[in-house]
Image 1: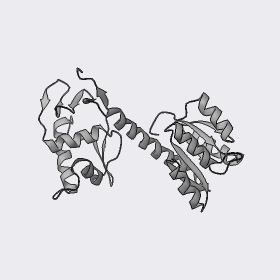
Image 2: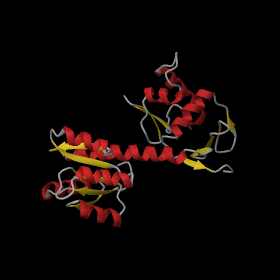
Image 3: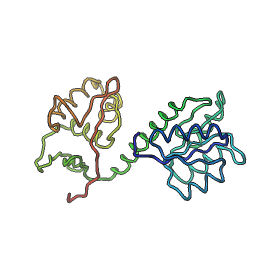
Image 4: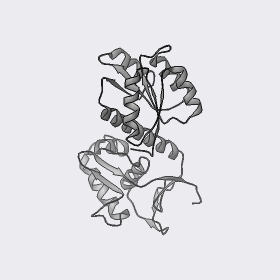
Length: 244
């Protein structure tokens, strides 16, 4: 799971489906609370922290689409909608009203868990970028990357020489830790689609950065290669004060 024991609220009026979802998620390291309708959902969201909401479209009383719109107007709690198979209109409306993902019934519980993991990972990555916006420096494992001076200092405080391209790539990694970034997305985030930019340039830059920050560049632990995916920056990253 992308976070320790996430608190998930399942809003589903069908008892069998509700029980199946809750049982499966609990066996996969989730705290699960269930509700039968929107009124019960509202009470539980007031009394408990909810990290993700699983919301059925067809509910007694106020339907899931309306509830989705209300939740999104008040919070950024991730929402996965459950829709009847083939109900494309419900799916589209749900996404337009702020749902993060949808799943058509009937579904495999393993697929629901995969969707939950993906949504929580995206939220965690977005929160990290949001938390670092406006920061003048970021820190990881004793390293400090100064965004204003555009310089990198090692845990001993010594300045590490970096090219502009290397700095931009390391900054991109630091702003999105724990997230698999494809070479294409790294190009877009650092160099745009300028003439002469190509995926191989990312590999070259990653190799250069590894030689500067990894304990063993041949066995990297900070910038991991993800097969058929791209790269992932593994350390936790914190926004630092100017005098850190």
